[in-house]
Amino acid sequence: MSSAGTNATLEAAYSEAAERFAAANPKSAAIQEQAQAAMPGGNTRTVLHYHPYPLRFARGEGCRLWDVDGHAYVDYLGEYTAGLYGHSEPVIRDAIKQAADDGWVLGGPTLLEARMAETVVNRFPALERVRFTNSGTEANLMALATARAYTGRDRVMVFKGAYHGGVLYFSGSPLNAPFDYVMGDYNDPEGSAALIREQGDRLAAVLVEPMSGSGGCLPGTDAFLNALRSATRETGALLIFDEVMTSRLSPTGLHGLLGITPDLISLGKYVGGGLSFGAFGGRADILAKFDPTQPGAWPHAGTFNNNVFTMSAGLAGLTHVYTPERAVALNADGDALRQRLQKAIDDRGLPLTMTGRGSMMAMHSGRTAPISPPEAGQRNRRLVDLMHLDLIHGGIYTARRGMMVLSLPMDRGAFDTLAAAFEEFLDSRRPVIEAALAEEMV
Image 1: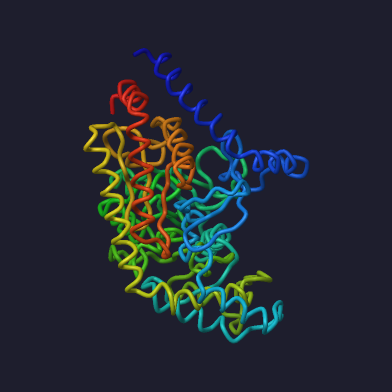
Image 2: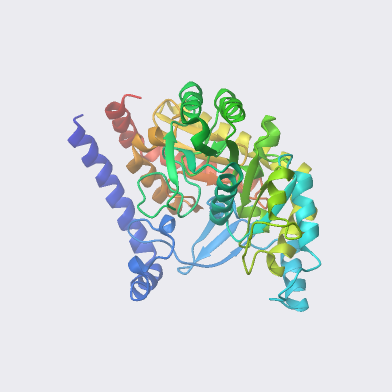
């Protein structure tokens, strides 16, 4: 089939799925239209938009969501990994209620922040000291600013297609924080090490996710990550692991599982118990620069850095719910589910592949897994869009980009529901999928 014919077949399938979606969700459509009067595109978070319009949710419980039109879904978006605890974990709810009962915006250190800090320091090997922020974006900004101040250098190395927050988005955004950037290729150990050495004493830091989350759940290879560690040590640049997403992948974060210790890490997402949260930290000698009892200490502000709701929810979650044992079990479930979905693909001989690790995974078109975000972006994204709408029709809510995330309330029934909806997509869309393979030849 010609390229034009393949595209026409895929677009016809997507148009049919979009029409079916619109017919089933008139209340979401009405809210979308109303929202456009106050927000550009009716949207205040770009990643949540998709055609013809996004679902509007009324409530959530456990691992399930209900939209305003009354449809129920198993939530595999998982708030892009922040929704680890689901939507109604009693331990988290009780902690938030206790915080509310005790009063908020207290304007001083509280009973919980030191315990929260001690908990995350004890959990993640790279953290000798930690500072709290309000989001993963803010944590990464502070980590980069820290590295630049500590080294006395200006330049920052990131990787093409990487995402580290709303102003650290390396896929063509004009809104990035104005650091002096140089960009390498993800999972290219030799090229990355050479670039670090070439930058020499101009380079303050290398910022990288040990598994690219937004880029398609693409694990960094041992060779790649160890090359970054060796080259940064050699040149004096700091290695920063963005573990905002990936810290959920083992009891000690992904860096702990891999046995690679960066100089700094950033945290966010689930660590705050599902509330707004961020943190950055690492080597004690670096973080000592923030000690306000010392002359010339660096300032670090943030009205809500130690807000009582996040401190309470985050501490309860890490100490009573997401224990090391639960972390191991959840990620084993994720590995098994990803292999189950891949087997469904392989049994049908279809040109799709699942990537990921533990409780994070994504689907890509093509028979082989991409190794970098730009490569993933060159695959047939429209096919992934089609899967997104088809899974919604099957009662499964995922990220538009094909990402699927597990949460603690999920059980075998939730896994079976995803597998059934996924297999229906594979079977009903076989001609479209096969046409996409003929075009991509991957």
